[in-house]
Image 1 (cartoon, rainbow, N blue to C red):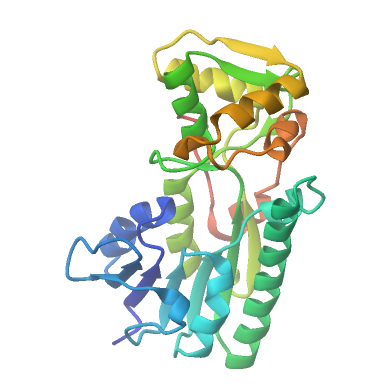
Image 2 (tube, one colour):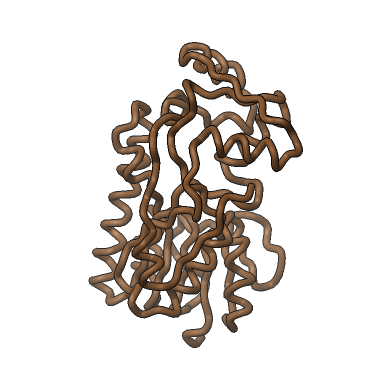
Length: 274
């Protein structure tokens, strides 16, 4: 296969769903890989934890979890890889939740392994670190807030909810993949990719209320009450990911500059539009 064939791992993810039509429109032949049942002949249902890519190609858009990438590259003839880490590798390093600390450590280690392996095998790499991703209803941030509002009619925050956020649409990240592929200046670089608008956590929640056609009902509650609330709803599948550490960050600023991405490949994310 020539250089215009691409493998996309994690094709059923938020970013993958937007990426596929973009790179198809750009003239790529695609082999899409995910754990979900395939939707067409070019989409394969494969467990990539087996560390083998099913076809030979020179370009890989790896949207699946980053820790799976090093072994995939070690057993391939990939020459160009564009992949995703997360700004969580910074924001969760000092988390009070051990699981979140482990996530940050895994991301940091995976980035290091990918870079070292790519240098050894002369693979051109680009690593993106997005902020809070939303866009097609399967995220655990914006979609979680929307689901909570639909179910309960209000949304709780600790304190005033003044922590700053930069939600980034999955489609903007998909577009960034193609922009990076088309720009040689992005080779062997990492980029933080935040959204096009900075707003407080409370303002973000209000926008979600409005998008649902509802008047905002945001209730400020003490931390101990929030802990009780979390404990009472985490048995529900859509809320099972909640932790105390997540809610205590509501008043923390989680902002990252994407100027380098704008300067290098024209990254221009949209404002928040849930």
